[in-house]
Length: 80
Image 1: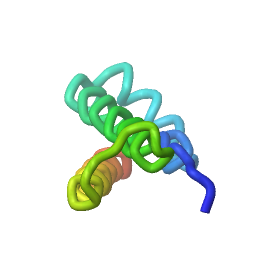
Image 2 (image 1 turned 180 degrees about the horizontal axis):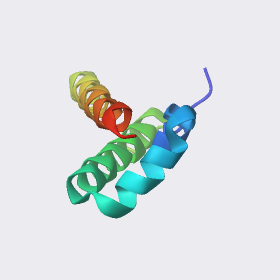
Image 3 (image 1 turned 30 degrees about the vertical axis):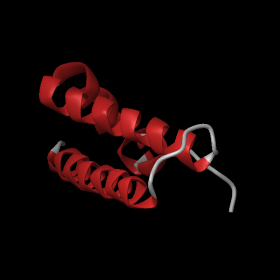
């Protein structure tokens, strides 16, 4: 399976306008999005073999990313 980053604009293409608006107007959302992007980069580095960590730690990072993605998705869907 090829490695891929999971940026929010690719994860939520149908919510592009809401994503852009919230990133520039909602500090809480912007911080969550930044945390999501950092986790995504860290996971990518591990999966690419550049950084070695324990499999359980990697699983924990992936679970954090999913949790953040769910929280971000909820905020995005509530935004007109």
